[in-house]
Amino acid sequence: MARELRAFADEGRYVEADLADAPLTIASVYVPKGGLPAHLQIPGRMREAPDGGAAYVRKLRFARGLTRHLERSRRAAASRGREFLVMGDFNVGHTELDVAAWRRSKGAVGFLPEERGWLDGLVTARGLHDVVRRLHPGVSGPYTWWSWLGGSYAADTGWRIDYHFATPRLARTARRAWVDREVDGVRISDHAPVTVDYDVAQLR
Image (cartoon, rainbow, N blue to C red; front, side):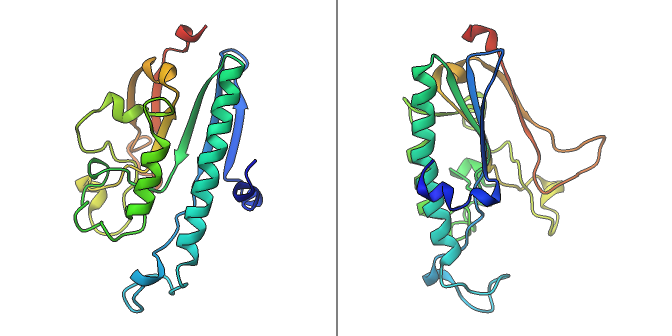
């Protein structure tokens, strides 16, 4: 595991397992939320106390280490004839289609150029594919996170920051993807789970 990931081992941010009944390795990750870089931190306009950009630097350090680790895991899975899938909360809206109010969010945590650029490098034609975007091309959302403030949930002005990133062959087996906003009509979190129906029988 990369040094950057070892630094957060006690936080339980990453877990990986091989499925016993399919040639598939699955990982789950929770990327740190991060913060603003130092030059964008203006006291009095922030909910949190200014930290000099420490949380921002920490998030990017984790992201770089995660990229290296995912590449090693993807290659290791391929060497054993297995596909690879990583899913979870990446705390980044990748494109303008992934953030409802993207114009006013350009300077917000989770939609900063460096964060979005990191996902540009992670999601590539030969590496990992954004499965939900593949099934929902050219449309806003489907969003997976909404602020508790205001009426963003009711208006569905959210962010898509929870993803399924899969190797190309596995991505092609995805039949449908959806976001479960509520359980029995009740909102239970600021996030909602992302479900993808994969035809894993095609992998055997």
